[in-house]
Amino acid sequence: MAPPEDSNHMFPISAPAEKRSLPRVANWAVIGIFLLLLFSFFAQARDFLMPVTLAFLLFFVFVPFRRLMERLGIGAAVTAAIVSLGLVVSVVVIGFVISGPVNRLIENAPQITERLEQRFAELRSNFRGIERAAEKIDEIAGGSPEPEPSAPPGITSPDATPATTPDATLTGRLTAIPAPGTPQPPDQQIEVEVNATPQTSTLASVLNLGPAFVGQIIFTLFLLFFLLSSGDLLYLKIVQSFDSMREKRTAYLALREIEDSLGTYLGAITLINACLAVAIGLAMWAWGMPSPLLFGLAAFLLNYIPYLGSVAGIIIATLVGIFIHDDLFTPLMIGLTYLGLTALEGQLITPYFVSRRLQLNTVVVFLTVALWAWLWSVIGMIVAVPLLVVMRVLADHIPGLQKFGNFLAGEDPPALEDEDEARELVEAGDAAGDAAQASTATMVLPTRE
Image (cartoon, rainbow, N blue to C red; front, side, top):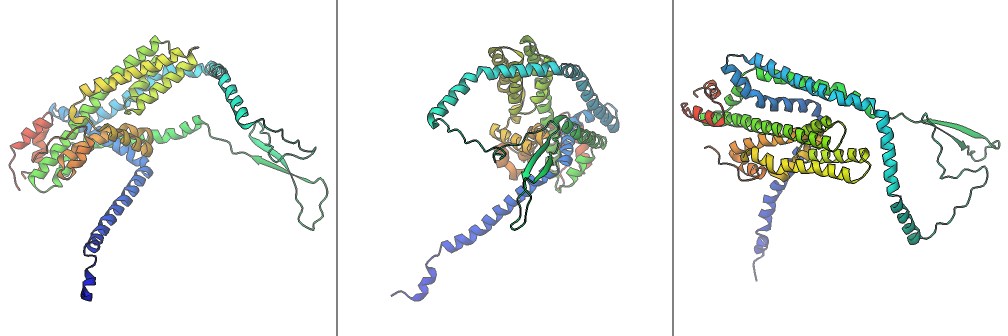
């Protein structure tokens, strides 16, 4: 017979496994709570974080221009003023270009409204046969509906809906119900008047958002001005926060690669979008669409939003074609033309001109765009891919994020590169034109570890 103390060894594996699993589950729970709080913070602080994010992304884009101007003897403050004023002028020019077609649309609003109503009635008449067939099927399947008994005179049906007056005021009569034991005169009624809350129009909503939008643009431009006018201060502070010379150099090269990657991506995308805008504008003009300049400008701006931008453009062009043309074949061909041009751009032109090291996982791009659209609306969709590019570069330079970088990439990321003072390192890199030359220029610096 086995000794009783052997019963203490009945579950020699399950107990240690349970002890090991609990901390792991707790860690994942803490991570999940942190992510929920982080996304909630991004959503609540969107009015502040959106202009800050845009300013920093534009800073990395225009830093090479500032460095070039410094080599030409122009100070950082002057360069920052040139960049800020240039962005303001660009916005004003775009507004001036679209002001003419927009004014014509406003002037022709009554005719456009009448045409839309007429076209909508025609479309409904085309589908009237389908509606009648569906009603016949419902009658056959459910039988003929029995007529409802009419209510006696003077008694209002409980299902009756009060009429709505033009000024959104609802007026009705409710029969008073006497309390038990209380005498009540016959035919006594109570007048009840309900004033519906007026709904805010779309134009009023846009006008209410206008000051906040303008304020965010001004905040972005001022922050961008201060970042550019400070020269190398931001880079110096980041590099000085590391201890060894190897870490300082890795951090500085990561910043330079972010410059190159964002500049390459945004520069190529802007040029491609401009060519696409010209092609779509000419195509809309050939199909007889109104204001082809607006269609071209809309295609230019919408194409900054991956996937969803082209889908929105196709839908808009098709709907406008339906209400402009009398047949359905022409609007279909307009939508297919828009689809063909955007597909040619997205599948052939952009992958050819954008560097392969900037190619990202398409599923990750789509989910990221959807996530930032949920958090920050349209601005979130625009900054989603540039933020992914920055994260991809950082993952290439941080050893602990190698697997994360591989997940973001369309293919395997490149291999990672294994005082004097931080100022000497930054100044040596400033003389270089791109990240590869900066790597060579900083290689000769003495190592003090």
